[in-house]
Image: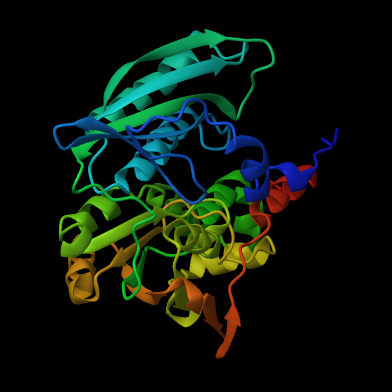
Length: 356
């Protein structure tokens, strides 16, 4: 039976709906909130006093059947920690809410939770509490949500609204990482039939590149704000170009990007070809955008590369009046924010057509 889905409404809420419905209604305004909700921001920041802030992020928790329970738990932890680490400091605390489907067995949840605990332990994250239950109407893939937090000095934390004109723009790993990893694991028979078994293994290995925690902390180790890294933003829905639009909007700056310098792995290119996707605007957890003071850029690149994280300079931050521009196939054109992420349409279309 085919599932009827309005694909135009799948994924993140568009900015216009956030501005119409959400942003005008944000409860009590409190002066302790240094960074609140805004398009393109990964984290909230709350002043605690004594030069300390609490940095907070949230994300869904999921079970993706094609990934299995343990890898789904790994992904849930790293989606949260990747967002939080863009502040330049490692995650420390998490609270979780599980609204589990009634058909999820105790031993299945135990397997998921054990993997979740182990990954939090590796990252140094303490689980503070939350809520866990089974409820009619709940089902895979979204089984709850998490709130992750860390403490940081008020004069040191980063936010994705801190990029400044003159900064270099660096990207890590490549585009369409999540797209490559998830689609190759969800539709392995199709991918193997098209490109072969060795290609399938390489494409599926992209899954373990989803986390940007190491990328962010290695880059931050060079220095923060005026001493090096000025802002970071992890790439998710909307891909690289969507994330660039979010960061520049949050920071109120312009940008020049040369797509010929963007990292595109062979696996990402071929998976995107197979599913008719543009690699620059499709789901790409695992890619980190870093803006850096120009005099510190080479040091950041060397630090990333010494930690086996591929990185390249792809552009430069300009003033807001300059606008947002990309150089594509030798032609310079204005960058417009992608309306929707084509990943979801490709995913559901392939699922409904019975691709295996």
